[in-house]
Length: 356
Length: 273
Image: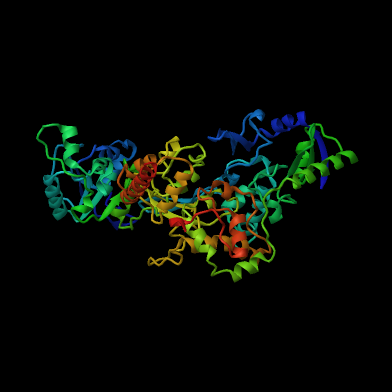
């Protein structure tokens, strides 16, 4: 790893250098009814729109590499037969300017399934191989528990990573591409006192977490608590709306649908991201549903994240970004669900369905 | 030119007819106003009756698309005749599926009074609004107020090709999230998206207009939960009841909530005394 220091003013120069590509970064998309800024990853055309001090985006940047709907291939039907056209749907590289460590870790986890498995997904690979990522240090929010999941800092999967030191950015340079881009702007070697300042900023960040999850022996505990009553409690609260999966940076489950165009001259094979909380997620041909109850669907979501993935890859599939806690209207949060499974005690003061 | 085969397999071009009862005819208009694909649609099916679109009419049809709710005895009679002739009867739009906006008059539980308020002494027959399935067997529902033309086209294409027809079982939230909309609850607005059947591509929430549930409940709709969430967000019982009652799909839940609210109101009254 190479470390550099850049003056804050120089970052604008870097933006301009990178701007010949499509830049995606955190921008303010709106204001909530209680006055909070709502951020989203959007294409950025003006450096001033880029909000590097953003709290968290409501949605991950997933739509740029794992879109909710994607046409996998199209068919054109003519008199003598038909032809198939495959498009990986990436026409230009993407620069991600300002991703938090949790989201970079989420990409690394997706890589394990979609890139490094026996059956890589070319649609994902084509996009993943064409991105340039600038990470940025964050301020822990009330729903963040990345530190519990070991995803509060990123070690790979990005090109460069910025930490705000007040007047300048401490830069971790991870890739040759980043190194070459940085040649276009003024940077300097960090001195020992800059290292100290960097360490202080990181230590301050670490002291700011207010939410944590006890992951000790979690996979084993989940195995033992399969029949626990607390699952039913959370299942009763669950709206089965799939929002948690939609906002999750690591949820990749999907369904494929084939449709014929109305002129009968073409057809499409479309993939759409699905959620294991939706009623027909485990419905199979013939109509049998393996998980007709809300609580079993919710449970399996937790098992995939915190047990199944653990078994397969020695790590959890959850990065602790807290987006699902923020988005869930029924206030189902990962820290509370896991704490209740560990203790076997349902949370007080929260009513399930029918006030139970 | 009518298409007679797909991938060499001969196709049957079904005869279809469109009918309306108590409705605004907006759903039929939806089919007509999609000019880009209207000709393709017409080459897939043979329209034999469509009052809003053509003068010719025939009673020889296989698929009947029926819009509107039933509010008069003669409507019920006519619907039964259509049922006899049609192989497939499709309820099209919220009025046909649930009673739609028309069934709002049922909320007063006093049809005589409603009739007097609206028509005065004018001699007109107007009963409580009923969905088609209260009168005849319905083979397929196409939800929405109005229906989403893309969805109708997909359904008709699948019918012609002999493919199965299915609706999304999940709620509007999935489509709203896919469109990267900001959740309206974050903006302080009520929304039935978490319990309403998808298929509209989150039409209203995408325009910053909370869902009113025109497509009725999704398969695993946890309506009790969304009611208590709306209460936590400090929306009044009236606001919630209005939403649940508007299109008729959530009638049962609106009724239960009304009863509960009336009980707690009378309790409060007694306590005040």
